[in-house]
Image 1: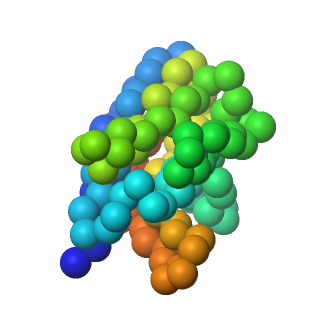
Image 2: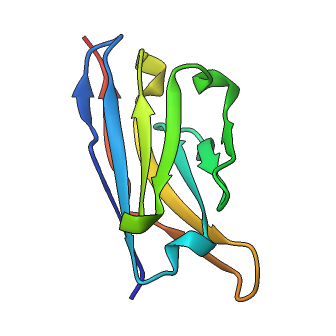
Image 3: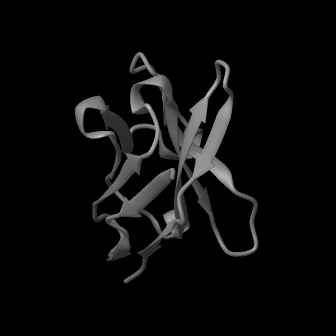
Length: 118
């Protein structure tokens, strides 16, 4: 059974930091590209950051220079370090695992709420 379990969300003041974690089980983690997406109320889900099997990263323009994605293959975990948080970062953050080579697979976590407010 595949599970992606996010943690680390919460309420933080503007300018603060949070670190999200996503622990994966039931998959060969090193074969998957990992990503963090977010969905704010009334908006579509959007890509925040992604990291390939080889460690190459990609970020949404809105978070470049503030967020950092990393992975620990030994512990099947992906992280999202979020600094200088803004109210517009408020959203539910979802972890995603994609396997682009056969067998192609796409898995999602249940999401964790991040609220940036004073």
